Amino acid sequence: MKPHSPYFDSIRVKPEDDRRAAARPGVRVCAHADCKCEATHRAPLGRDHEGQFVWFCLDHVREYNAGYNYFAGMNDAAVAAYQKDAITGHRPTWNIGVNAWNKDGRREGAETRFDPRKARDPFGMFEGAEWRHASERAAEPEGRMIRNAERKALDTLNLDIHATAVEIKARFKELAKRHHPDANGGDRSREDKLREIIQAYNYLKSVGFC
Image 1: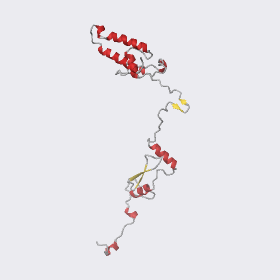
Image 2: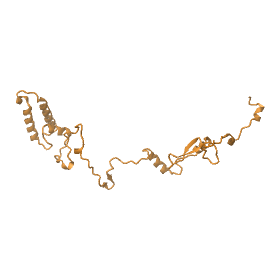
Image 3: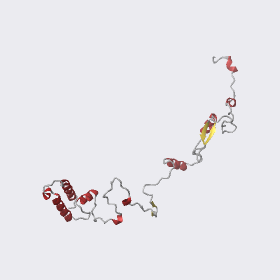
Image 4: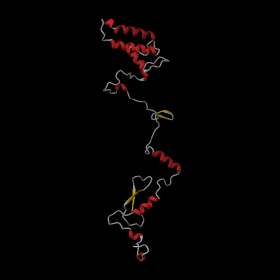
């Protein structure tokens, strides 16, 4: 049909209300006032009603969404606080290291009751480790920082951290003589142990222990 056809004058369009189909019996009806159409779309109720929805027909859900504002009634500070909390999913958080402390100091009962000596170690990973409580440990020599490598070297020589330079040298000579092949009739089976002793002594010497 051509645009200038006289039949255009005879075309009639039903009013909007007549074109919208009424809801069938037993079907959810649109929540908009005076609307009897089938509710086919849901929309959120809003803040403080998360997980709850209201149902509308297509036309009225569009109208509802156009004016929907989750932050309605909140000032700028409240909106900013909400957005900040949303980063952690609105779950409570604490600064690292403050669980056992408050602004006035350490909380009562915050002392740990864990005793490593009673822990299970099925793979022997911590065998030989020094698990004594801090109050039970002997004070280390003042002015000397004992590193793990130095502890291991002293342990190889069967010495503790309080050993003096004279004691370290004496113990080295004693162990070297004991494990040397010449002192064992040419038996070289202890050479690996002798090598460890020499390396431990050289390390202690290099860091100024003797």
